[in-house]
Amino acid sequence: MSRIGLSGRNADELAAELARFGADLGEEPGRIIVPGLRRVRSHLDAGDRVIVVTACEHTLARAVLDVIGLAEVELVASRIRGPKLIVHNHGSAKVAQLAAHGVTPPWRVAYSDSLSDLPILSAAQQPVLVNANAREAARARRLLGARLATVTWTGAHLPEEEPAPGAAPDRRSPGPTRGDAHR
Image 1 (cartoon, rainbow, N blue to C red):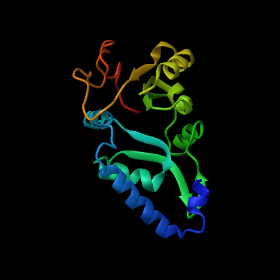
Image 2: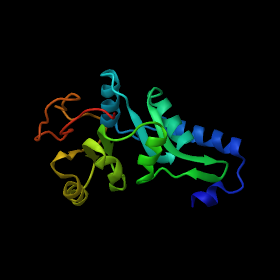
Image 3: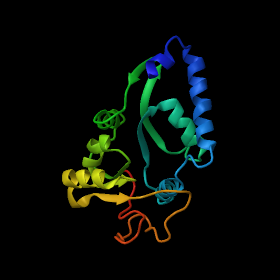
Image 4: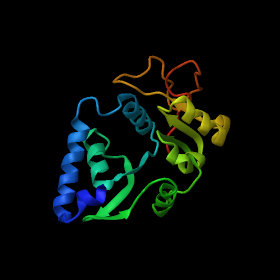
């Protein structure tokens, strides 16, 4: 579908359209999961290096990050040139793309909401699976073991007693069971 949507498009016009769309997404009420945004900000405030690694197209993802106040966050994303996909940053390609940017495993923490990111999660000292259903969490735990933490971030508020980054986990809390930052 992406190829159909991009076919015959001028590269500069397409980049501008993606930037506008990303800015609109970032400003759309309810689109951004506030607990996740707060977690990123807490890592930044602690001086942690935070890198968003996504399959989303770079211009689009950068626009969203900029609009929601995360301009200082590094980004490793899929890339297009005009209508042509240059890098599809998905699955194990994310580890390779991080390495191309000088970031090699192990990293302290990796957060993901998808089992397609098992290569990223596997390389983290603290893998954190976000908003997983019971089946996904069980599969990830079989593959990653007891070091896997899970979090449920819903709505526009933080759980009441979310631990600070690096704090001991509170297994009773619906918030993160562990929290550090990306390497």
